[in-house]
Image 1 (cartoon, rainbow, N blue to C red):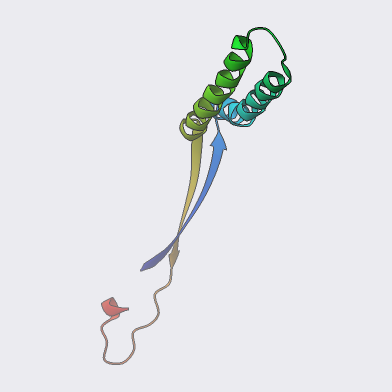
Image 2 (image 1 turned 30 degrees about the horizontal axis):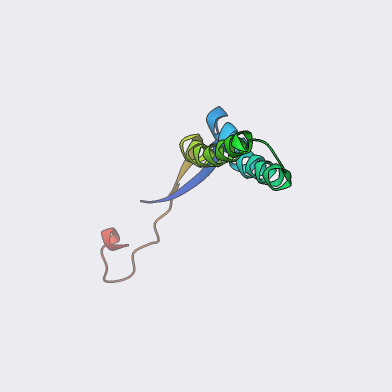
Length: 96
């Protein structure tokens, strides 16, 4: 007897994965703000701007890792028995 197997898979983010998405999208925005402010600065120390740029860069990279680690997979397996075709003349039934 032959069987038919269907597997349906779905991927979702956990809490860590959702935080990773926010860091992945927000990191470059934070770095861009730091660059923009640094280019507009005319005097004083630039340390605060560099910290903002590096925090955005680190958040982006950590977000990439969290998106990979923070995934959950759900699988649904359905097994349905099917009727084997009748044996043709000259063939044993096990060959079908």
